[in-house]
Image (cartoon, rainbow, N blue to C red; front, side, top):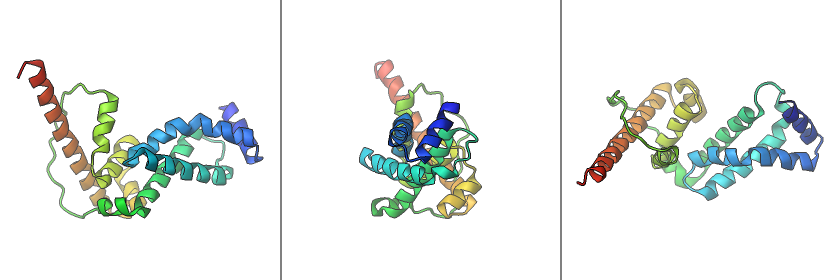
Length: 186
């Protein structure tokens, strides 16, 4: 942790070597964060670059408390959400509707799926569902916080999360059924 604090102090002195080190230390993991919110690697890389510009512009606000990676991650998530709101191809799909919550099966499917396959399923969700699912299930935001971030009410966040979860469960059940058919010779 002290090494990271020294790195931050050096970055604040406009030390280019330190800035490059900070970027290299976090770029790979933050690209993964950005990719979870976008639909292409090009978009994720653009969000990453915009995010790091914000990191370096606002590094003076980091109080040397808590994990530096978590502070940078929050900037990346906010940058990704703002990116989605600005880009026409995402705006239509980000339409959050206020509607009644659909019943969701509470049983958890018993499916063996590796993390990469699960992340690919999440990426196939419509952007609005994907964004709320990531904010709630991955980043740990509350529905109230999500509502404030996205400019929607808390109930809409809950509804969209429930729909995303139901859709993922449906896909996982289909995946499981296909796996069983393949395993047992159809």
